[in-house]
Length: 108
Image (tube, one colour):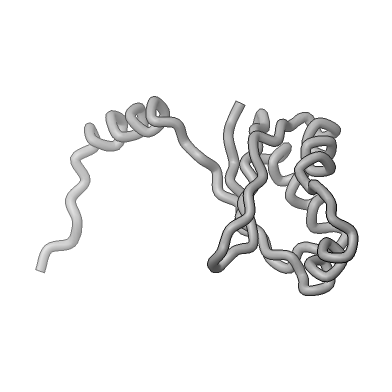
């Protein structure tokens, strides 16, 4: 399984609705992820450029993208940025592969 980090911002209407009717959105997001063959690892809220961060596990990019598209469909998310996360082991494998190529950059 692959992990993905989605940073998101709600619309002002979504925040207003959440303020009127308090809800644990992690339950709805976990259920949605399960329906699409993924798993919610965590949902956290932040204090800067994004309103929150969700970590999910999915078998592939298409599954992760389906979760993101389903989340966007109702219109309560203003913006979302999803990043595939790589494990240390995956990164070391990539570094070994890239390190053996011997590519030279431009010289002045």
